[in-house]
Image (cartoon, rainbow, N blue to C red; front, side, top):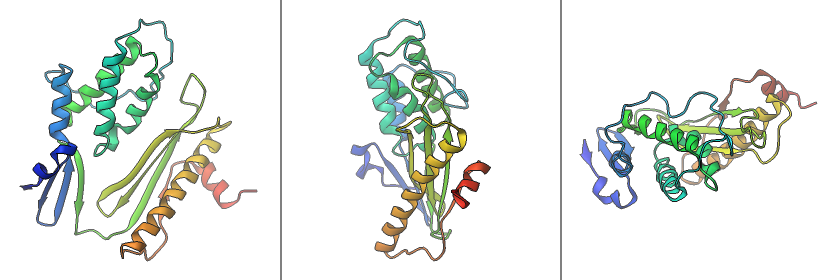
Length: 227
């Protein structure tokens, strides 16, 4: 593929185009992170964090170098420009910037091990698929053991590739998984409306409704009947 990355490498982006396909990656930047933190020869992992990993502010482990932890999390945070697959992990690790402990540092290194096995991951866009907006959302009910707040996440695809995604803690405590999912659905719906307006402004008005998929039956019933 033709490499247009030199034009964008000041931003850490590499753009490859060929035969109606465009791939956006940050593979060189990811390699630089691994080398900077002496993890280039590490053993790869299949996931960035364990499923339902629970990290607390003070778990009894000793404190680590805060400056080094800030540099690592900050570098990984910028990598989410083209890597939404690590957005949730980075959002979890970012919550311990004030007082990072050894357990947080170990989890951050697991993200580096995941990067080692996925260096060339990126976002693929093709001109073969319809320009149709579709969304997905989910939430982690009371996933934070420190304040019991839930985390909302959504992603929107336009044709073949993702164009918008978010992962953040909810501002208030949810009393049930249904409430947490409904808050996430609300955030995703607001984003869908905004994206539809943007697409209309650039001449790509959506012909039909935008589907937003989830896996929570109770939140869908609440959407259909708020009473």
